[in-house]
Image 1: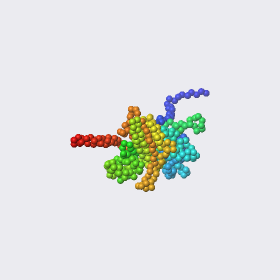
Image 2: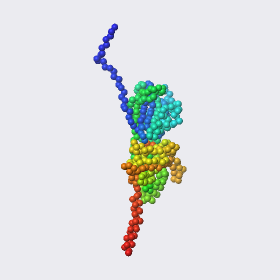
Image 3: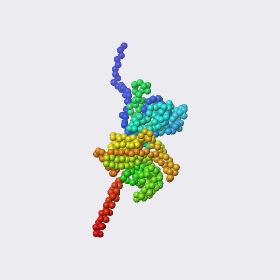
Image 4: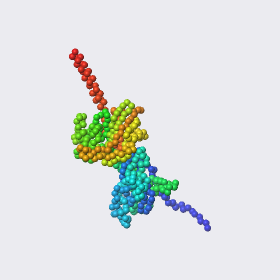
Length: 468
């Protein structure tokens, strides 16, 4: 028997729609949402956070997002939720569909859960840890500091509700946000569908395992607006008796009933930088009287910053100059493995040596000087509470080092005119508020005062000649 087949000219083949993948993007902080296992009503996903900014950082990070289709978190490994809350699952669509489910074992039913990293001691915990790159107490360091600590990861088990009961119907959460203790402000975009992530096969053979689906969330550092910083800088110099404090309300002002948020901060004697703002008023007014400065009424508000950094130009000579960097921690928390970075308009390329800290000149980053504590001294402790606000005030945690520079090349800095002060300062990735002014050299005053004896002598000679 023979069969002849003739193509039907009217028949149209079914077209399969291919998933469109966008190219992976670059950013300061990259978050991956990779689905590794999928079932009818739930799935497993790995969330990976990577720090890609050379000066970015997060400490004790808290990650949040918003579920858009009624999902809830059944379990987590490598991280945990701030609130173990199942109240959102007991009513509504979740309660209807999962009526017989034991919700006492569910982790979180909030629409906007907050997830945090686990401490290091949980890394080998069989139930909570055992995830590569997990359990680092929420620390994400820049690769310039330690490339082995620039990534965090955890695995999440997500349950779904109708009408999304399908293995391939998966929607990532939206409105991602990540914050740290005293770190940059990261702005995150919407998740974009990218090619499935690849990872080594868990069996150990030379094979590659693909994720079922992958999304990428790109977060970039936003520069703090005026009054929204979390650290600030003070300036002082050997050629001026007054220290310039942080700007008024540099880190915001909540209570302005007894102070003026619009007046510039009063100049201070250098030792006043060592005491809390509430103890500076007497010193500031006394200094104003000695130096014949005006005292505004009411007095300017404080800076309200958790960390302040003093940059003191200590010397200036023919072939170089020197400065002293002092860190003040006014918060109760400690900063482990802290770092700071300074940029200059002209003087940065002349960096020579840092004495009590480790420092590296990053030429590719506008001659930024990257500074961190040496091993055993990289712990900036929190403030020590005093027994009496007036007689025994709080004492900030403090670390200090001298740094030297050479003068060379075409960009010969003029220290007396302000080239010795940084134009950008960061602490743990957060850009600090700079003072709106710099110390002015009093060299002109000195030259006038030195000429007075000669002027008096000249006048005396003229008088003697007239008398004769």
